[in-house]
Image (cartoon, rainbow, N blue to C red; front, side, top):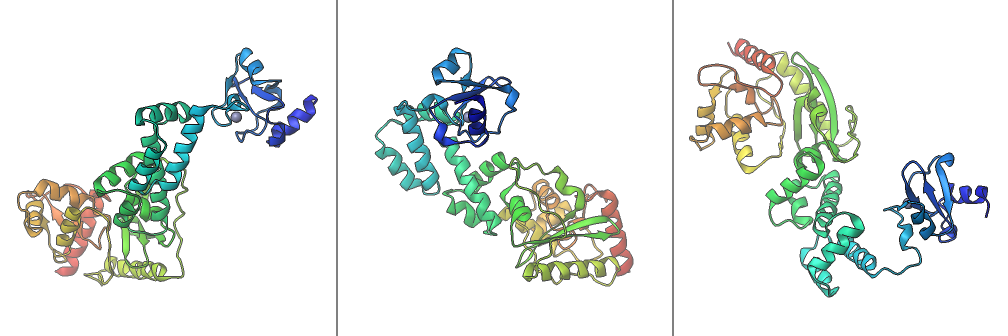
Length: 351
Ligand SMILES: [Zn+2]
């Protein structure tokens, strides 16, 4: 083997050379098997070693991905960890089954956690959680509801699912579904209060929001946020078109109520508040206290105010018709100027 042959093996990730030599990368101080799937280093930074021992003697550390230090040497701890990882991958959504299988491995939970952590830099329970959330992501992309997803991936309580999902992805499951579900249509409509993004599912309008809203969503995953202007030739595309048409009529003063199904995702409490909003007549306003009473919970005006502010379907669900008890506009997801515009428009048309 000369340098050229070894370089070709490194470039081609050729597993046939595993065990015959190892390569180190000067810039990182890490050494790998020839087959390692990590990014091919620059040739001038590569050094070659006969054995893993030679590489370590030269001060290199084994790559965590290809584990050149395990080559040829049986490592019971690594083997155990790999088995556990495999079980979690296969049974992550079935709590009972997974518990049985892990128990069948015949090692204590503490020992398993130790070897797993050493091997993968993560505890088995955290790995399990990530595996569940990964499954949930793909279900939400398929358009499965948040509640059905949380049950299907093994959560007994939706709030734990919500919390874990948010911690790992940086957004709520409902929001994730709105953005990444494959069967949605989405487009931005230019209006007098700025660009409004409409997101429609096959059965209902999921979201009407300020166009700039999305930039503040941080998704920890590299899922690519879809472009606006995806209008599918299915029910969601038809709903989107209908929503655009109705909003245009609304802004021109020709429409006072909307004939579209809306399905804003939220907690039961939030949905109750959003339901109450739809009872406020066009051209009128209510205070947060009045809205709380309408939602059947007169004492919860603060919580009602927060739910009001989280309304994902602007205008169709008229959260702009709620104001402070002193008549001040308080807040609005699309800005106070927009709220003032909508209230003036409705007052004028209703007069
Ligand atoms: Zn490697």
